[in-house]
Length: 197
Image (cartoon, rainbow, N blue to C red):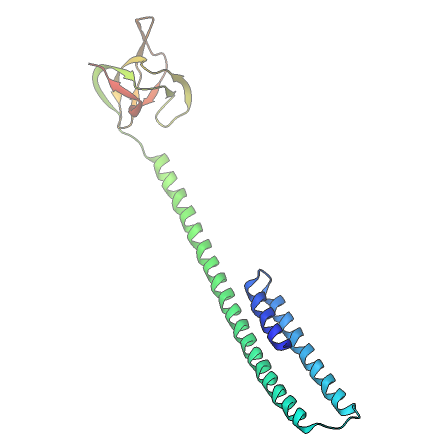
């Protein structure tokens, strides 16, 4: 009965969140306790001054043999679980190392891509002077990919004759329906504006 209980405890422990070493120690403790109880039973049988009931004794010998077989099977199972746990730990450590390498590689790739994007220059071209209007509120910048220097509201109108692939330079704008020349470099993203007819 003790063996069955020990097997149940072993299986329960294997499915719990306790560490593998704790599980192995508990199984070893159970086996040690079983051996001690077996020795105590043997000593107790030797020391008793009662008539020996040989049929009963044979029955206990058979039970003892069965328990020893179960015990042997538990030891084999414990060895298998220990080896399985070690294999899984090794696999997990290997996967962790691979994940760290992948994360490092991605981090380096991201840095390289960001450097390339920052270094990329846009070709500026002159166009026929035209009037543009903002589709929505938008930030204005001191240069292409530069610093934000303000925010203009939707529908604000401005003029330009200089643009790049993604940016439009504001050369002049309207204040109280009067056109005013821009005194400094002002750029806006081309996605935020549309050309007026």
